[in-house]
Length: 215
Ligand SMILES: Nc1nc2c(ncn2[C@@H]2O[C@H](COP(=O)(O)OP(=O)(O)OP(=O)(O)O)[C@@H](O)[C@H]2O)c(=O)[nH]1
Image 1 (cartoon, rainbow, N blue to C red):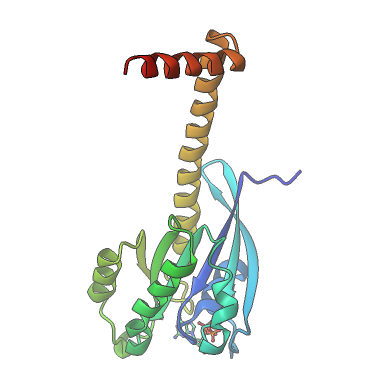
Image 2 (tube, rainbow, N blue to C red; image 1 turned 30 degrees about the vertical axis):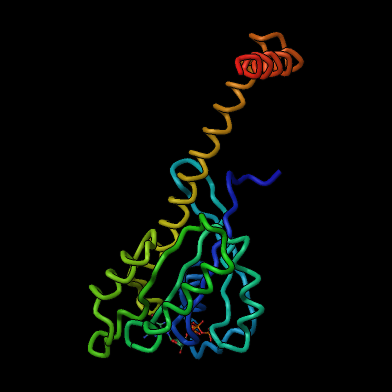
């Protein structure tokens, strides 16, 4: 049996060249790949992290930003637990395309997916074109769950990004687990105090009858 508590699927999207592959490789392998070539279709890597005492497996899907792969990458949204939308803080057009990417997320992802906005390449100080405040405002206005500026080159906030994703998803999952547990406990108590499932149906039928007879 695998020794992890949860497995989460995290999908990175955003324009070509914003640094999605470099972020994933920095986090999973600790390297900044020199001369990283464009992603073809999709690629994935796995890394296990600790959230409290729990081992969490992150399956991280790195999608191609190029338009011609859009129909392939769209099919990866649906089963994602989290979507990380990346732009390049030194490239205004990559920020200007965010509404288009949001449209893709809204069309193809699960309604309750965790959404994270990331401005990458903060190491390029003087070449910055998108101020942090503008990124944060966009994140707030569009209801992202989290906003972060990163650098895959010098590792700024890279571990924090994926650890936040793992922590938030784990906390959400634990709340869901607790609700299911509570629901089951309630159902068991109700059925044992009423003499079992047949009695429940009887009771529902009685209630239905009495409500109808009131008319
Ligand atoms: N200065 C700097 N350059 C970066 C950073 N991250 C990526 N790059 C560079 O940006 C270029 C594109 O990086 P990729 O990781 O291939 O970008 P991508 O978003 O995966 O691109 P696609 O696969 O085409 O969608 C490469 O030349 C990287 O070296 C960063 O944090 N800082």
